[in-house]
Amino acid sequence: MSEERVSPSNVLATPAGFASGILGLKLYPWQREELNALEVQGTKLSTVCCNEAGKTSYLAGPAILWVMALFPGSQVVVTSGSWRQVREQLFPSLKRFAPIFHGWTFHDTAITSPDGSRCVGFSTDDAGLFEGFHVGPGSHRETPLLIIADEAKSIPEPIFEAIDRCRATWVWLMSSPGNAAGTFYKSQTEQRAAYRCRAVTVADCPHILQSAIDDIIQRYGPEHPFTRSSLYAEFTGEDGSGVVCTLAQVNMCIAEPPAHTTGDTSCWIDFAAGGDENVIALRRGNKITLERCWRETDTMRALGEFIMEFRRLRLKAEQITGDEGGLGKPMLDRLREMGWEVNRFNSGARAQEPEAYFNRGAEIWDKGSRRIDRRTIILPNDPLLIEQLTTRRWKRYSDGRLQLESKEEMRKRGLKSPDRADAVLGCMQDLHHFRPQSYLANDPFEQFDRLERYRENAVLAGLDAGG
Image (cartoon, one colour):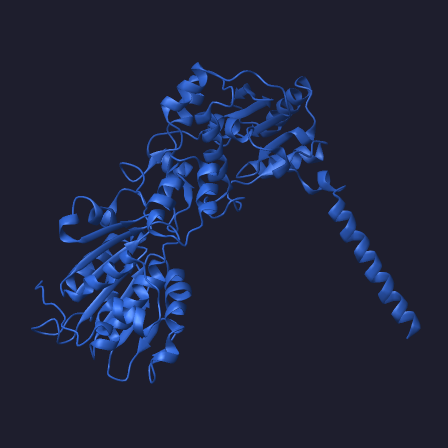
């Protein structure tokens, strides 16, 4: 593409001047530099940002409105790996400027101006939707086209091929970091010569409170993937993924365990499905043991053996947690019928820290692996456990949350279900989070709510009687 520089009549016609003088935005120096890169037609930008950097409101939004306002008949196409990003974040941030642009029409995912400029936004895996978007014949200035790929890390590869065919005046890839794979990652690494690249970290964003930064570092550790991604805009994994727990971490924890400390007792049970194992893992204080791992195709016989082990270990039902996924639910239902109302866990349930984890299963694996890394737990020296702990991979969901490799994906790699690892990591957790409602029946807030309902009913009854 040619490098034709815009010649604005005044500073307000530059992208950053437009954002400041027309839209009233207060920009950081790096935001001004990124926006003003659009003065050179033919520019391709790649901007990887930490969380809360403001890329949608301070980069994408001003760029869109600047192109539409200064180039009559221009086209802007915004796509994203997330429909929610387009409809619920980008376009609402654009609509707040509607009073400035008289005669413009702001729809949920489209904008049109009286002089023929238009912007459309969508999320798709259909490359055909890009047909019809292109610059006019000859000069880029005839019908300029800006394409923005927001949250570019999660956009399918065929979409990037379609973007290349459009011969756009400007292309801007912007996103928080994801896995170390795909077009966006390559735009920051092996293909960076074709882009104007920038990585935006918390150091570039004074609006991000130090207390929030410190909280993330304290909770996850300075080298945790979530920390490196959300604060320092670093891509994760050498091949697009990484193991949840490394062999070095596990070996060090086993070789140099902490001193044994007493404390609560937590038992985690994992039920077999197909050729998998039934597992009983037990934690007393900070020491974990694999009490029994066996295969049994007769589920009723397996239940009898579970109960026999509970009695041998002198466990109470409230000290035991079972995974209710798959075969687990009917097994736990039957245990309850037999007088063992144990705690229930669902790996697909909402995480306690939903901003960091895709679901509860990912949360438990990650928090358990960090205990191993810090060597606060005594692990059993079991070869199969070590193999399972160190072969399951994690990946990033489209919004940056940590997601576990599914067991189906593991099977495709020739790995069996990590039953022992599930049980060992599970019994590291605080039992309070898994207890069924019956164990919380004496909670004072529940008692208060119940009494309040009684009071309301009594008042209503009195009103009825007086009527």
